[in-house]
Image (cartoon, rainbow, N blue to C red):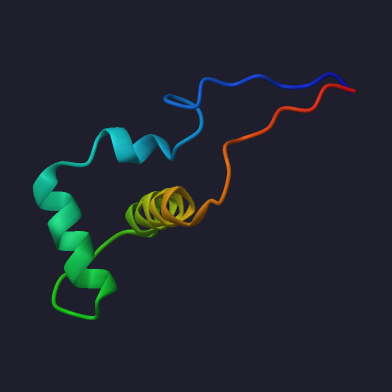
Length: 69
């Protein structure tokens, strides 16, 4: 199987992350925290993708490594 190369800035994130406004992100913060408001499953999925990236960036212990076999 050949490796698949992606552009991490375009293909490595949930596509909806590029379309949400600052107000949308604030609304999603409230929804996820259990407050008022509504969100679609796609918005929650994009929010989870963003949270994952934030946590990984803060918790990684070394630079990324590429292995060539």
